[in-house]
Amino acid sequence: MKTKFYIKLNKPYGYECSHAPTSHEAVFSLFPAELIKNGLQCAGRLDFDTTGLILLSNDGEFIHKIEHPKKGFAKTYIATLAEPLTEEMQKKLLAGVQLHGEKRLSTALELKLIAENVAEITIKGGVYHQVKRMFAAVGNKIVALHRSKIGDYELGLLKAGEWEFLLN
Figure (cartoon, rainbow, N blue to C red):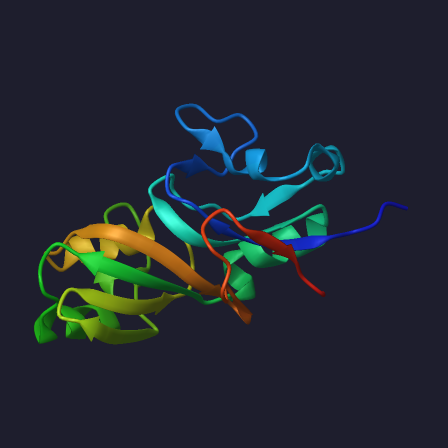
């Protein structure tokens, strides 16, 4: 029986969450070959231009639990916006916005203004470019996006490119 391991990574800008990257370096290049050989996989993805928390493991059940929308893991992001986030935009995000091609409304579970153009947003789900599309739906644009939390897993003090084993 293989030993299961669980890792959190602060994904740097410009890395792809893929074993076969197309345009950028793979996050897997940040890990020793031994971990890769033992089946290291990402539990969910971040776009190449999004930074922050990624969970990785060789435990398929754990990965499925993190990725599956019905399991209900909330994800928290820090979004730096092109324009100030108005009160009206905040109300729409908390009420839910309809994203093109999606059946359900995408709703911010929590939304905190950090600065006039920086917000902390917590969502459930994880449809394609969800956070970016939510802000676009209220007339704003994300210029930088950083994930700080998945469920009870927090990024903590890891610097970009750093990772550590989790106790699971």
